[in-house]
Length: 311
Image (cartoon, rainbow, N blue to C red; front, side, top):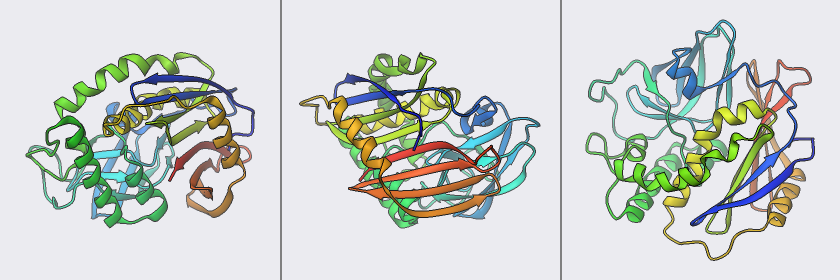
């Protein structure tokens, strides 16, 4: 957890979605970290299909920037769309580095339309459903990821009153969240909430759907948080859209404070180095799971990202 006291602002609410912001000082220079989406858009990184469902290879082409890949990032293309299983730092001029992944498009194992089957073309979304995120990060189960993807597609279809299963690949999570009607359903949420992260001292957020705790993401760099905000907000919006129920009450700031206090006292369950630059820790308490990501080449192995998910 972030060691400096965090100031909480909010609630900021639209329909059944409530967001709280965490404010605090920078503890780490995040300017040299480039998120996966930006790195792919600017051709700073190449993600290779390996032919192994559970492993891809990322290659950082930049001389100076480190690529920050966040667990849940979805990659479009290859032989099937994938989601990244863990947070992962890919150093500048890295060469090809293996990264663990899960399939989010069961059944396809060949080129789709004009896409490359050797490379991945973009990373515009992050898996939104808690069931999928926990299946990948905690249970590390491909079958549970497939089940979660199918359930999230069904929930979105029910909410919109139409199928979000794409004709080109009905099992593709990525193609489902590209559905034009789903995109239109997000516009009002985004217009109301997109500017929340403009303030320079925001380091994270927590969101609730239907007055229920969902997820928290906290960074030790305000710069990194702002770079990731578009994807983070999209996760919250998709979770809200997938639930038809409207909010009855708005969660209080005291509940967020209690949630953070519980997380701070969580029991360590697992700690492991997953690459020369990345160490992960998993903790749990009272129906909540906490994932911490450390950059091992920074002074004191600095904490970079804390993700809290309510089960």
